[in-house]
Image (cartoon, rainbow, N blue to C red; front, side):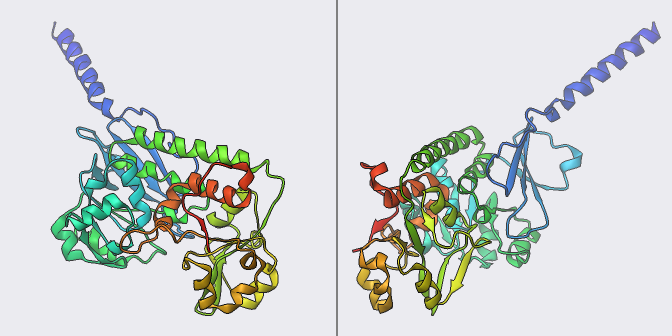
Length: 375
């Protein structure tokens, strides 16, 4: 009899242990991210594992974050990583490229702090700034630690240009939760846009984020197919002068790739690397004097402004033919240019604009969203 009782107790103990372990049963361990190279999301029962792999060029460390749902049980093997309870209720972001994700996910009201608020163009966010609901945090490389400690946001989304981030390190030492975001370092246009899933995971809105991205992806790929039927490939000059140097995108940058995807011949598309090339005026003029189209950097809003800055701009054929385009027209009320904020998140709109510029016959009824022809 005693042996039977012990046996029954043993069975009860075993099954009880099994029931307690259920929260760690894998729901889906596959990576939910498909285009972006800089992060991954793996979902488990009660928590998600977010890994940021490439927050800046040539980064060698992977940053792992655990997003823990209410009553979720995180395995001991993952407890050494930063654990963030989700869904979050308050957030601080540090790049304008983070803003559109909050807006798309209807979570603008959770934003409570930002460095250099004047850069923000979003009307919804500007309204919260004007109402005093979003605090100014100073310089991105020297965030106001005192204000942040007083605010105690659920999470701070930071970024770095290299492995030296003393401000973010100090915030973490002070007990604040900091996650790195590397959207700016993505080369693929859809890869940049896919970072909306990063924010979706923080708010418990992964399905909504995936649906939003899927629509952007679908529209982007549709425009890509349209661009491929173009019968011409116009030559393209990009950028302009700044402090005696001409800056234009390198061949592997997302801007250069978008020009190619729009079926254009960007004259520096064969150069290597991301970021910008820095060239002399003479070098650019020699190669691009006869370019069909000129996409400026966005610092000018008229042809007259261009020649006032540099009379030699008028010697380019694209200028003579008034085929100069800029994205500087749409600005927030404090001067922030909408393109810098929204374009990385909406490559579908950027590509459509470029196809309209280069091949207007393919999109006869479309009006460009970001770009306008300078007059």
